[in-house]
Every structure is written in C-alpha cells, then in structure tokens.
Amino acid sequence: MAKYRIAWMPGDGVGNDVMDAARVVLDALKFDAEYVPADIGWEFWCQEGNPLPDRTLEILKDTDCALFGAITSKPRDEANEELAPELQGTGLSYFSPIVKLRQHLNLHTNLRPCKAYPGNPLNYRDDVDLVVFRENTEGMYGGVEWFPLPEKIYDALCDNPKMVKWKDKGLENVALSTRIMSKQGCESICRQAFEYAKTHNRKSVTLVEKPNVLRETGGLMTRVFREVAKEYSGIEAWEANIDAMCMWMIKNPQDYDVIVAENMFGDIISDLCAGLVGGLGFASAANIGDDYAVFEPTHGSAPKYDGKFVVNPMAMLLTVKLMFDWLKEDELATRLEAAIATVIKEGKVATYDIKGRGKGDSTMDVAKEVTKHL
Ligand code: IPM
Ligand code: MN
Image 1 (cartoon, rainbow, N blue to C red):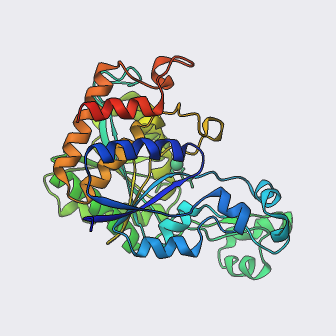
Image 2: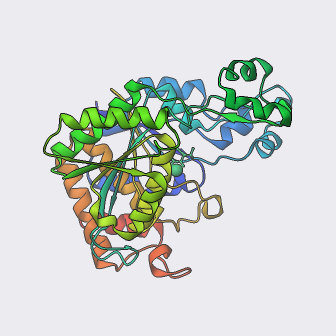
Image 3: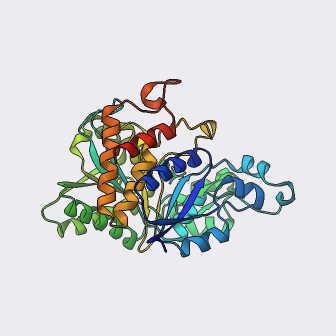
C-alpha cells in the first residue's frame, strides 16, 4: 500500500494541464502515493447541476489531502444557460466549488507564499519574500447574501438607524453581502501567522485591515491581532489599512515578511503580491484545516489556454512543494524547491509569460526540465 492517498482534482481548463505537469514531477520524485481522481468543476455543474458532487466529498474523507488544479466560474445567467436542458428551471444555482470546499472542510487558513526566485525576469524586485495568511471561511466570502433584500432581513437591520435610507430605493433594488467575522476566526489566523513567523525566523507580521471604516469587524480583528502579538515579543507587529498597503506593496515590498488578513483583503493582497514575483504563474497556495488540506495554485482555469499546454506550471509545482511541507516530507520539499529555483535561474526552458507570446516552451517541457534537476 502507498504511504499516502491523495485526492486528484484537476478541475477545469488549464487545471488539467498543470496537474499533468505536477504528476511528471511527483513520479520523478518517486513520491509514495496513490492518486484518487475526484470530479469537480464546470463539467459537473452542466451535467448534474452540482460542481462538487457528493461522491467527491466522500473521496476527500478517505484521503490524506487533495491536489487541485483550477475552477471556471461564470455569472448566474451564463451558468443557468449552460445547465443541461432537463435541469433548467429546477431551482439549481451555481456556486464556486472551491469556496464550498473551504467551508465544508473548514479549511480555515489560506497560505500563500510569494517569493522572488533569483533570475526570474518577471520579478518586480529580487528581494521580495513574503507569506500571506488569508482567513479562508469567514468575512465577505462567507456566503451570507441576499438579492432582493427580504423584508424581514431589512426590518431586523433597521435596528441600526443607518439602514433606513435604503427603503426608498425599494427592497427589490437592494443587494446585501455581509462581512461576518468571529473572534475565534480572527484569533486562529493571527496565531498561525505569528507561529509561522516564529518557526521561520521572520521578523514581522503585518495585519491588513480597515478598522477606521469597518469599525466592528476590522476593529475586532485589530484587537485580536494586538492580543496575539503580545505573546510573540520577538516579532514586530505592524498594521496597515488595505488601501495604503496596496501602495506600500508597490513602494517597499521587500519590507514585508508575513501578512495576515481576512478573506477578501487576503484575496486581494495575495494577487498583488503574486504580481511582484512573476504573476499568477508563480503563485502557490494551500487551503489548510485542522486535519485536511487542499493544495491549489492561485491562478484560475484560463479557458482560452485549456489543453494547449502553454501555461506556466511553476505555480502548481510550488503548490506541490507546499503539500510536501504540510506532509512533513521535508527532503522532498527541499529538493523540489531547489530544482524549481535552478530552472528559473537558468531560464533556458520557460513558458510564454517569460519568453514572450509564441516563443515559450510548453508546460510539460518546463516540468521535465524540473525533473532533470531533482
Ligand atoms: C482565489 C480565487 C477564489 C477566491 C475564487 C475563484 C472564488 O480568487 O483562490 O483567490 O476568491 O477565493
Ligand atoms: Mn483570488
């Protein structure tokens, strides 16, 4: 029997391309695993009205962790049009399966390293090396939303006098998305950021929030952050507002070490950070819960490149490295990262994002080049 059982979920579009690349590298490393394919994504929405079928959730229960490629999401009307004719009008509505997975498995922590590997011509600066801790189940992406706004929700919200002004617009014209955050959720993400800083010798943790405007949710997060920070006296605790932080990340990204944020701000800042180290082609991510994790590159499914094997597999390969970290397969993690770094530095084999449109090597060529350096 293999040492690990890994759920294998390519998902949509170029998710398939980069997962093929991952497999080449996993096999070259002789990683002792059985890969269990699991259905997820657009195809299953269209055919069955469910992009995350129950049989997939069963497979996840029975595996150590999951590797995941990418997901296509479309707005409501388009999603409804592409649904199988016999399912149309049955009240089904599309949801993002990755967001659902994070919620369902309580994958509360999204870890997103952004490191400028030497020699990457796409680096904004060569000395950026930071890690984003994004809270992954609460906040603006918690999914508590309405449109139109039901009368009873409106009435309850009128407990706050600021609510009254929306009545004039007509409730049928009002949409509501909530930002619900718990003390436990805030504490968990802050603590993990500080623990990471401690174990990885990082000098600071920066909270990205907006407590001057989002006084209750942002205020709670800020208070919790300060409390947790007290327990880590050797680590500097910095605070920045999300808007200012976008500016600071362009001005002095080298100053930052560990960044912690709630769900939406973490989503935004992690794409910005990815942009500093070569773009989404280099951005890896881990969705981590108490005893399960789903590893997925930050990039989307890029439908126009689907099956063309042109996209950069480095984000996926760095994601495999995160999986090795989580499994405590330290030797494999070190070997893989070193091989990736060498291939980036040599720059001989690289995809179009580096070499220019039409001039890039294929996704698989890059993966094979990595295997040569393992
Ligand atoms: C990400 C993505 C997802 C998110 C989308 C696809 C739902 O942007 O993983 O950052 O916003 O979490
Ligand atoms: Mn995102």
